[in-house]
Each structure stands twice: as structure tokens, then as C-alpha cells.
Amino acid sequence: MTDLEKQIAEAKNKVVELEKELKDSKARPQKGDVYYMWSHNGVCSGSWDEYSWEIHILERGEVFKTKEECELDNTKRRILKRIKALEKGFVPDLNDMQEFVYQIYYNKKERSFGVTSSCSYSYYSILGNYKTTEDVRAAIAELGDSLKILAGIK
Image (cartoon, rainbow, N blue to C red):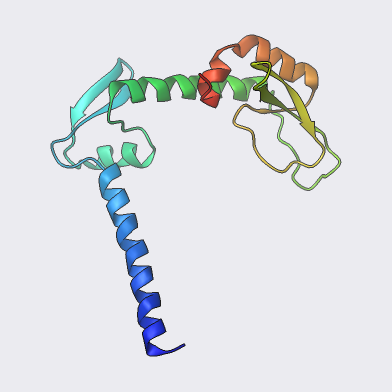
């Protein structure tokens, strides 16, 4: 590699670093910015002061620019908690390529949720991983339209 190529590579790396810093600075509230978070009393707002507890909730993904974003996140968290319970403790064995894993999928043509399966567990579905088709059907029946919220379907 020539000196010029090295300089170009270093400059490209610096650009990547600076872009990341810029993205992080946009995501992080600045001192005095109004932000929203969830508390035991519901959605509340605050003025960003860089307190350690504020940084902690920011790192956990619990700081929002708007009240609506905060409420949507809380709704999604409640749905995810319910999905976890409906999975009944089922955790697919990543080493068993013969194990069937059942999941919820969205059929765009029919605009409805259904059951799909795989015998090689290759990804985690945000809508849950279930041991049986009956478990998936029960989850669809119980969760109803809240699945659309979680899946981002309008």
C-alpha cells in the first residue's frame, strides 16, 4: 500500500468515526432539551441535565423526543412481555437443526396473521417463537391487533 493509499484509508476511517459521533450527538439530548420517559405515574417529561440516572435510562433506550414515541414504546414493551408469557418458556435449541420452531407471520395479501415453521432455527422473531402451532394460534387470538403495532403494520 502506498503512502497516498494509507492516507486515503485513514481519512475514510476518520469520516466513519465523525459520522458516528454526529449520529450519537443527534440522538443524545443536549443540556436543557425536553425529553419524555415512562414512570409509575405514566409519561412524564423532563429537562435534560446529564444526571447519571438520565444517562442510565438513555442507555437503556428509555428516553424519547416526544410523548407519542414514549407511549408507543411502552405499548410495545407490554406486548413483548405478553408474548414472552405466551411462549411458555420455550427456547429453541440452536444446536438442534431438526427441532421445529413455530412463529407468527403476517400475510400481506390476506392482511392477517398466520403460523409458519422452520426446522432450522435461524432467527429470532419479535412476534415470538413457539413450541406448537396451537401456541401460535392462541397467541394470535389473544394478541389480536396489538401484533400490528409491534410489527409496524398500519
